[in-house]
Length: 265
Image (cartoon, rainbow, N blue to C red):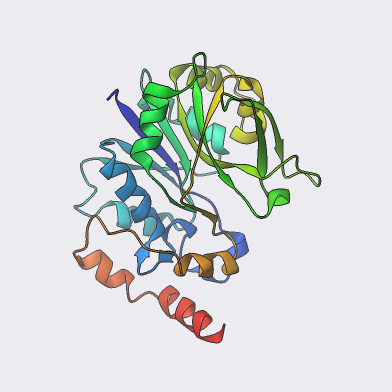
């Protein structure tokens, strides 16, 4: 397999999840008993991705403590953003780590479960000729709140609309991508581009392959969706041992908050 390096976007403020995110960054909210970000790292680990960068901003110290665990010390790296740079801005800021490689880029504050190995295989071996990016898609029940794609018979994106009052369908952008160097080069050459969905995707229409996630994909940015995620089947953890960090995490008030919410429903 060609080398693939990953950039996980985990710096969001999680304002829609307050008051929960006043004491816990959105990327570390629990799914079951384990932090969301650990699930992302487990998926990448199982795919053989051995270099991962995670951007940080909100509750930086908590994310740094999570990443400093022995489990991640030699392959996962944190990068702090003093001010949020936007999705394309973060990619450009970290471009030196991804030159001449395929880049896995994901919004790591979504709950996503699928066959990531198949996603990588499709991009590296089976994507349509002439495409330089693969976008993970999913079928949404709330298309007005998502970026919706229209594709041709080969699954290539022909049009993209972001949060339209009259969406053309329900095939949504999952904000998980595999990018070839040409995309990164364009982002670096266009510093005015800050948002991946509104600035980058329209530039590459006709050159974006799609791979549909038939598993689980949730925006857990609101409490009701986060609670739905607690009822989803949980993957087997890559690192089941309870180390010192995990022991402290399990005592965090966020677990009691979610337990109380579940009892009240």
